Length: 427
Image (cartoon, rainbow, N blue to C red; front, side):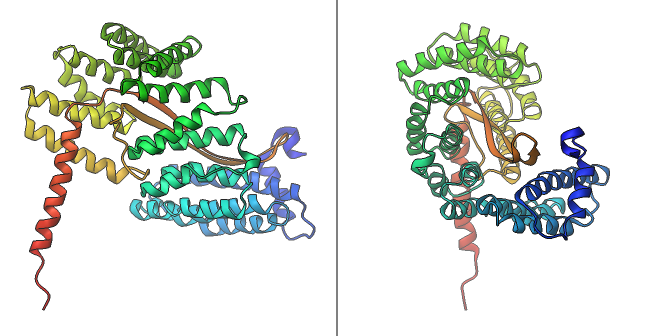
């Protein structure tokens, strides 16, 4: 009643905890308990961190103990969902203190266990939608490209093959992994998945997926794909506003540029920049197209500002690579810009939670949102949200990017050989 009347979360939890030691808990008890105690716990932890970022969170183990005890009780009513929650709570319990203690590497190592555990969960409960969502979302965490392909391409059971949500999660995972690892086989799998999405998938979601795949193919010279992508992004731009409008216009502009009409593409990019002034991806593309149109004035200043303003790693790195390109053309110090790029790439690798730093060499950079939450709804019961919502931006890769990466790879191999030669001989 506390939920139905005014969603009094603290009141609900008082009742839940008062009944904790009683017998005969039913499914509703566990759903309400898990769907209220968990979000409140994470809200309280976030508030404590905001007040004292460097202080340890009190009673963290006790908080997780409570959640895991509830999860074990929930097994009787929904073993698959209980197993999923137990996995998420256990991994979070291991990773959170490491991140809070500024041990990012150790925290990431804990998170990177999730893909294997998700696959094992799916095999135990092959028709659990929760398990499949975790499989597809966790493809972003693995640092093994073969494992990413295995996860993204895992065949759905017959009962779930027409599930619109899972099919969208899978094709997003396939495309994201293809772009991240530059995997042509995964790209083909994503194209097949995108063309066979159920009719019940949200129309704009399906259109965005197919248009992005068409744009990748069109960039490689497929004119029919390029035409379809242009029409799709233009149609999306007609009914979007704000950041979504900026994204659609940016992508329509890039398709127009691929088709050879650079002035028209520049006009679209100007509209994109006006639609979301806080974003800089359209501005980056304007600079890249200006370079292709043999305009150099102001580009060094533009590309110099973008790394500090963009929230997309691929845009930041390509902007730095453009500074190298300009330096090689006489606008800047080549050695300094190369060193700055190398340092930036190394820093991005340290901070990147995905299995690899996304470089955008295929002309697409991804700005993804991990959405993981647990709650209770009066009209839906226990709600578990676990998905990645990607926003794919078409971009012009910097001309110097490939050479910079090749030089770095060569340098790393040389350093390893020198280190091996420097090792003392075994006695």
